[in-house]
Amino acid sequence: MTTIPAALAARLVTDPDVKATYAVDESVGAVPPGDFEVVRARDLADVVEVMRHAHETRTPVVPQGARSSLTGGSVALEGGIVLNVEALDVVSEVDPLEGLAVAGPGVINADLKAAVAEQGLFYPPDPASSAFCTIGGNVATNAGGLCCVKYGVTADYVRGLQVVLPGGEVIRTGHRTAKGVAGLDLTGLFVGSEGTLGVVTEVVAKVVPAPDPALTVLGTFDSLEDASAAIAALRRERHVPSLVELMDRASIAAVQALADYGYPGDCEAALIVQSDRPGHTAEDVALYADILEKAGATEVAVADDVQEADLLLAGRRALSPALEAKGPRFLEDVCVPVGRLTDLIRAGQAISARRGVEITMSGHAGDGNLHPSIFFDADDPASRENAEEAFGEMVATALEFGGTITGEHGVGSLKARWLAQELGERELERQRAVKALFDPHGIMNPGRVYWS
Image (cartoon, rainbow, N blue to C red; front, side, top):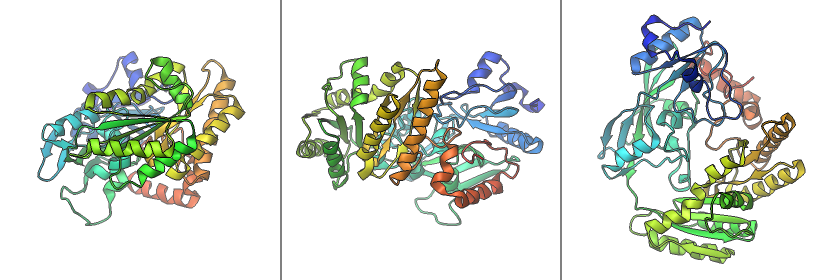
């Protein structure tokens, strides 16, 4: 039976129904275990006390934020403690001169963006879940988003961290200065570690001057090869777009079933491209439109103002609710070299036809990161098994094409079985050894990432 120190009694979630909501995340098949506790930390001292107690009693700890993980990275473990840090949600500092902001792990991504925008600054990482995902979760998974093609991922915007290790020791990594090369890059080690090394309690984030409001160009294609040529041409541009998104025919059909967003019913792909370059957005989208046309786009629409830009992006923003409306699915996250992107789509279509399972292929074309959705009937075990096998084929295909099993969602528990395929057993053992330096008793999110 899991026990919690008396000092944390006020932080425990005792209502069974509420407790159950903290036991799962957004991953497919997540279910609460029978014996676990939930501690909602209110400050650093609470986190330290949990980590001290867990280390002494060898109790598993699952660090948790908004529970938006799609890979099972924040699901409660039997006999473990869910350590929720959503209440550490203060942006304590914004420094325009140094180009940084200091935020607690419970700060919502969109709230950090809003806080720095008040001073003419911009925090670029932009997951699709920006309105509800937390900065701590973004750091844990090295989250990306729609604008990675220009701005990069979370790791590019983390200068330093405060982390509580098993046993309760509080450490700081990185630096607040623009430069800093003293010692090993422990910040880089913790970013993307998915709660397997310690608990992040503060983030020193890099921020940049705010760009202009983005303008959008939308192009539709009758051929995936033409869309691929357009993506390649956009990647070679001196002034790279701030967004390059792709939807395949199945994704477009799902969006159009939700509402009429103006997509032709028979096109093979749509590309949505944006520029936010200060003083040059109109010039850039005109150039991007020309690139799409020369590559073979059958229809091209260019926004003249921010309102039109939002309308042209509306179909892409509707994709997630449109796919959710279709029913249960595995939401994949694989990344391949940009030149193999349409090969991956073709492979997904072949898997779909061979297995008789519906698969939509959409995602961040500018950096080769697609999010295939693989649908199944939740009431039919055979249907789910078929979808799981298709899921595995998509991962294997991404690796075959020189890609990775996850571009931004993380490994969690759902993809842990494939990590050795990508890294190799010897590299996996080295990473387990590094984990053991920080977590000698293996209490931090066991069974996630380093699956065995």
